[in-house]
Length: 142
Image 1 (tube, one colour):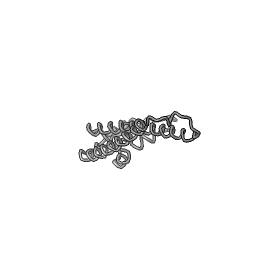
Image 2 (cartoon, rainbow, N blue to C red):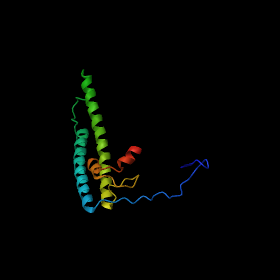
Image 3 (cartoon, rainbow, N blue to C red):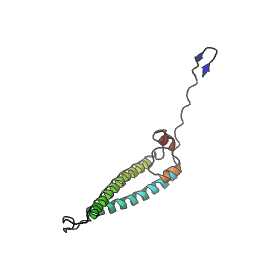
Image 4 (cartoon, rainbow, N blue to C red):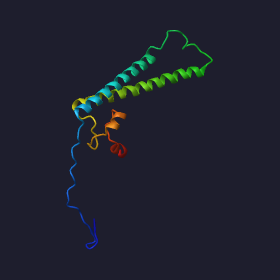
């Protein structure tokens, strides 16, 4: 605060308020989040299996892919589809890791606590993005 009489800046001697520790979710709430995470993990595992099958086992041993054809656009389309499948597989594998990490946080009771602010992440956000580790305030300030 500016002190007009002394033409100087006053410093506050009041200590900054101590932040309260975040209130953790109750065991029943953690169980509902664990079920949601387990369901998402099962869906992700199914997607991973499907993508791996499409990438690894969708090959016949014929000569269709080695002979020259006049349909270069179709050849490019097959390559593009494989690249997209590989990219989707990579994203699904990362999401699976995030889900497993979230399940570990549920098990140790730290699920739903913002890693930046230490405050509880709202349940609505966790239902929408169950792997969230940041509250919206921290996410927007990052």
